[in-house]
Length: 173
Image (cartoon, rainbow, N blue to C red; front, side, top):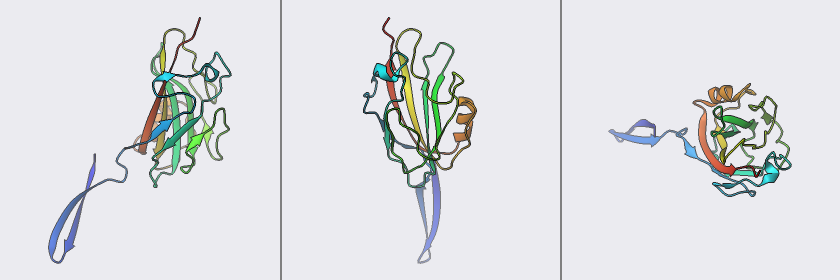
């Protein structure tokens, strides 16, 4: 944890205190009504079902947050981490997105690694994959990123808090 050193003069005495920085990375709690942490994502939220976004909720957003961003990615993809969903500029007072819900005013979806804007439902070619639903509280809004790499560059140094909910999925053949 980074610290600020505060020097205060109190009645002629020098008082030194180390207070955590306001932007020290804190944790968000991320949950879904559709699946529990490290459990299977129901097929309705995958390519074997309706391909809708699962409901997502988060708590613990710092008061100084200016926006919320979401990144859903699969590190088990054959060609490396695959971005399934990138959403930026969710208002900081929002604490959830409903299943297949529309985004709140001001929020924007970016292109996923399929090249389409919006949610690319989990569809692993083989085996069980782990899908990370990452939620970030940011100290600013960011422009709509062109890619996962651009998203990561935009949020670097601006994350006040973050949380991760992992769901798994394997296709039945």
